[in-house]
Image (cartoon, rainbow, N blue to C red; front, side, top):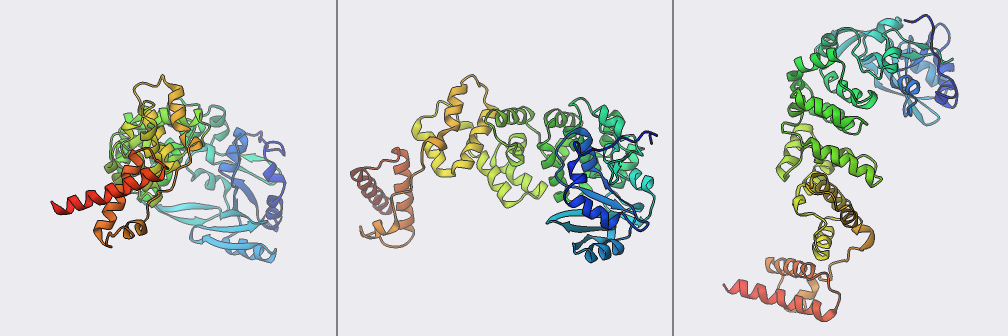
Length: 423
């Protein structure tokens, strides 16, 4: 560790000196025990990036942490007490507080830990140098692994031997690429880390699909996701994760389209661009990554006939798509089609297509079952068939509102069912 300690200040880390943190330090950092902010909060403060959550490490054991916090009127939840972690809620804000530890045994997925009081040993058991720094209540930063140098170089590097770090938890393969996509300058990954990831890539199959899903979706949102995914594809790792061939150009174009339309990056939408060509791809990803029902539904809807969406669609055709799938799904499908369009010169046409939900209020279908019952149609399968036929004809006719047209479509649908029944 460097003799000169860098410091966090009120300007670079206001969260350290204001609000809940000083209260928590007052409880934990006393009577011979020491607490520090660790990991991502310190890293992001040094990089000038937003800090959304703060984790702490402490020399105090979990029972001491819980006893002190409870006595101070703070709510305590033993969220991972077997690994030394409890969550302390201060001013309605949760903080994970973990006792210093070292790994006694690892199997690539789980670790058996033993509590300790050695800050350096705790730091060196972490994954990357930029995640191993800590800061005390006064803002003094402790760097036992060379994280400051790697922050300056915008480099993600394993602590110590990369192969050893990966063997402790194979999820670190994906974390290596995710952190590279998030915190590097977009260049090539660290050579030693990349080589170790390639050598161990088959071990990704041993991980739970939920953990893989979580890391991948975070990676897709990172600033340098496109070049990172290209490296993962070239090394065969991305194909192993997706169980399919990625569409990198579509992913890159989707990220650009989101920026052009001032949209927040969306992991599901980007996954669709990267890996979904047809509906069956959505089903494969659902199994492969344990996607949620909502994520799977969005991918299925994006996959349906996206290749038919283009600026030369007539007003009836584009309105029909919007009517059938709704505003959000419509925009997903338009962006997917745009990301794969061979000809993108018609920017105005694509913008007009995308803006349809803002300019046209989707009407409600004018037909009800009762209307057909009143015309003598009996309840049963035929009624549902007639309703569907009438709705389709109404949509294909351009959503007419005139009653004479609506009645004509209604009567036509009934006659069609009679003719069908008489065949």
